[in-house]
View (tube, helix red, strand yellow):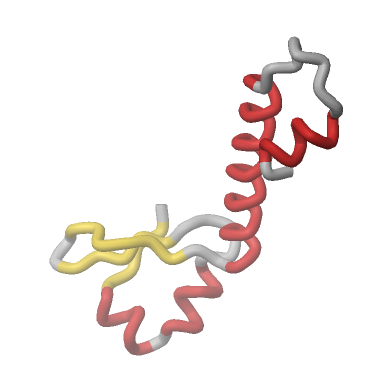
Length: 79
């Protein structure tokens, strides 16, 4: 994993963000990771993946045994 220091992040944040386009960059302070920088596309892909996972689990766990309308189930699931 690519790492950078907090000092480098302060001096040139654009360069660190560019490095983080496809993979997170760990930000260290005194050789301990304090956080991560994610590029915009990587962050959005992660959020989409998590949202899809949550939706699939909710749909899988939905109770369809009561023969409710699909629209009602979707509304209850927040879809």
